Length: 562
Image (cartoon, rainbow, N blue to C red; front, side, top):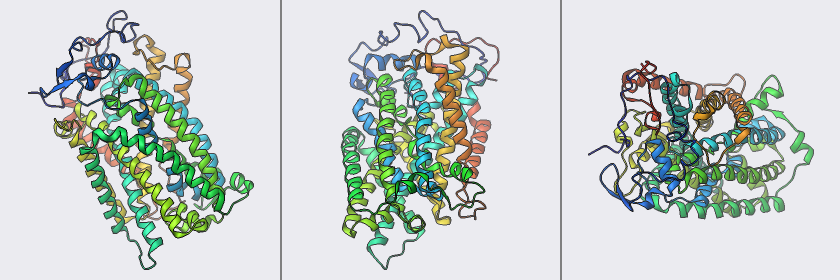
């Protein structure tokens, strides 16, 4: 009986010489105009067996387009397709949580840039990152797979570099999503701790207590995503309602009751509490808050194998959620910045938004409004863990990680990659130990999330740009396409991700202490080293990359992957 990490076809040995691909433009090529009209050859029956011989129905397989896409990519359908366009949109909206993130994670932007700095960095980040979102959305339509970036790199990279580039991208994607997942429990746990401090005068929170809160939240996330998987679409829809009404409730309360700055202060008052040599440099460092609020549209791509009609629903959800969150984000940010009348005092608080709430509301109102924020960030944490576990599961399915067979196992009755969820939660707990030694652990975690995510965006967009310029006839047909705008949009996206990647390594303060240092550079280097060691010891013998299973691919033995 085959392992769940197996694919529908056996992986060729990575020592097999491969240098070039040939696609038949009339039959095998996914650009064929009739490719999306045919059903997979084995898709006519109402039932079929999965890798383990368990009987599945076409509810798992989705639409004819889903079946055709999976067949083209050489993948078996293991997960239930229980998400639709609306629930996918809700999933990404809640995971991104732009206005919640701006409320809870604005410290870095306010330190390096001040009120005006945070506002304008959000404006340029939102506009520039839009090119990234639509570039990723098109690739998600071409190849709607949970693997996301590493799969796209494997398909679109130059032949000689496909294998190692895909492997490296898979490791960086896993790292970014694991780090991002760890940031959620940290936010929820420490916000609960900060709220307790406001309610009990004798309580002084400690790092170890905050870390225990992180662990408790992580266990709740594990149980929910392993045993409550089928209820997630409904849960996401309910949280979308709370996301919108919570937004309206908080901004109306702030408009009515909070003290206000002048427009001149909000839009033109740039400050630098980080000690940088120029305001321009401070703004570059402080933009990390805005970047963190705008990332992760690719979350929908990692859920592709659980979404019905994924090649259209995923890109629609990616772009729709980005525009919705971006609009709510700009309204909320302006409201929030107008209410921060004493920035130095706000920066001394555990969370800036708690300072704003205390200045405007009674303690019961602070508790009620803060609870809305905490619930929504917890919901985003569930979504983040869900997407991360699917990306990790997919990479393990292609033998990209140590212990791949165990991680890639899908629970036969729950129909979720339970081991991948467990591994993700274990990584969150390991990363939370940073909090014992540093008061700015969260800053290091989100920096690690950003730098590793940006490099996957750079590589995948660079690879599809390469194919688009040099071999456009070999690109799979996309039902959601950039058309003639593909090249300029990809170029703009590549330029911005390179720019953002560089600045995400910088610390908040000039000449930081050990506790203020941006440790993401060290963690990024350590994980990259682990990936290299794994490649030398294990992966080069077993990792071929998902491209070797793509329908219509034919190799000629000329030694590219030796």
